[in-house]
Length: 305
Image (cartoon, rainbow, N blue to C red; front, side, top):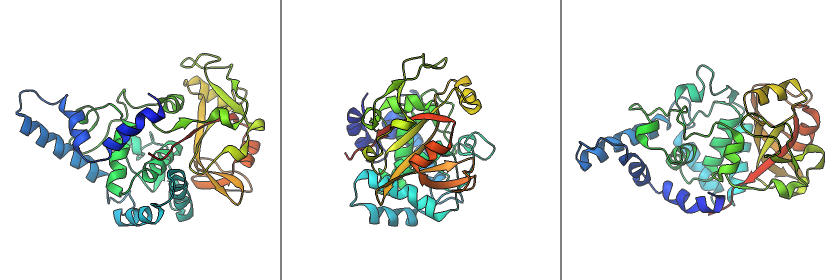
């Protein structure tokens, strides 16, 4: 399914609880009357939403809704970049790997606005940028991160989601190829080359990227998602490849004063630019020049629908 094919589904998925109930109904207990099935699914759905709204680990819904209103007239890419810059400007989100103790994956959360890794930062900023309210952003999170899943499959009675569900995309190349997070624009950034190292999951020659020395910076726009291809010649790159992954990091593009920046959740610092463990902003060209772990980029662009 391509990005454009996803758009009608995305519109339906954020219209309200109906899509979630339909998704869950197929897995409900057939012995229960339809009305009781729907009531039970509604309670589970509402619990999931409330578990991710106005909690100690989330921004207040009023704050979210207010900023959404101010950004509402802008194209979706600018809204996504606006949210990324908002978290950077706030400065109170700290890096925490999702699988670590207290991380969003371990806790089964869709939202944690004060502890994030690069994947959650990408999830959250794109969901906020594509939504018109805090509630809708939670709905969007469930509908995209667990596309095709039922409430019965991935949501507990207390509202926690199960990231071990097979419908959740654990590998970033699969995220890129799904079309759920935009159309792939890698080829517009320069001449692509095949990744000849590959992994057990992605055979050599099946993934294409633009080498970092040849990126056409002017082709990038606000809100583009940039994915960093690990260099197998480095220790960090080899470790990434050993777990089957090709992408080692990702971030959100913001264009400011003709300069292309990347905003991302950084687990490590970059001397002269930022400290570790926070959401940071740095010229993308500088980042690629300074960080030897990555040999090139891929990118996707979410469009208005």
